[in-house]
Length: 342
View (cartoon, rainbow, N blue to C red):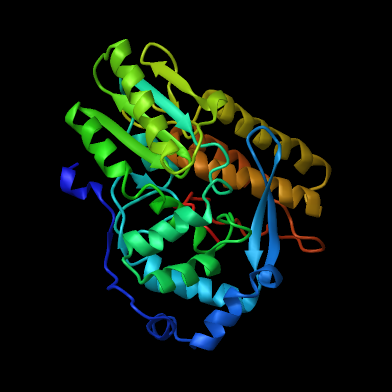
């Protein structure tokens, strides 16, 4: 990638007054100020997700008046940014794929892989970091930047789940990441960040000193915004062993699904075959079959040969709708997107 593509660039002009911001967001100054003073009452809990270790991940949501403004901030300000090629996840991009498979594809068939994870990424993105984005990256007037910060943060941090949060999180390192990526690029190294997952790889053997310098560079960059690495996720992999990025194997020229995950999906299909014999019309079976079908659709992206065989088996045991002697409609195949925040 060309070095000139390393920096995020805003296509939005400077906003010098709150009245001008209100105009951009198709609302009034009074409404924006009222919303900003009532964030606690407009916040509400979001879905509870599950981390890889099974622990709960609590997300956030917003009530309608604030949610409408968030949608406009996202579309009219945050989407009007050209994000550098190495920023992946949390961004809707019609031109470039920015999903987890792209993150993995950038690091296929490498000699060495260095993986780091940002601890508590969203809760660690403070209102000061967000203010820096609005004021220094977008070059908005301090009064405008302060108002936008109040509208897009809750209790002093970035709430995971708000429509604006993924974009703001990706801009948190806007003035530190480019220089670091340029340094790596000049050494022939590849860098990408999928939200809180930072990966650096090399297609040639590098010294222990280089590895140490790379890790120090990552930690220094994160520290500049108050982030800390999750030490348990720190990993250095070499080509002689299995190398993995965002749960995909990257030893070969194309990302592939790990064997243990393929075995899990194969087991799900087998379970469907067994349940079909007992009750092909139950709602429980329908849910089980649809889950397996979606996972087979995901497998098709990375291991199409195995997925084709499993699709044939699933088609043979399609659930039957209650009281109807016909198969239910097959759900569309699941394709991972760019993991944009809700």
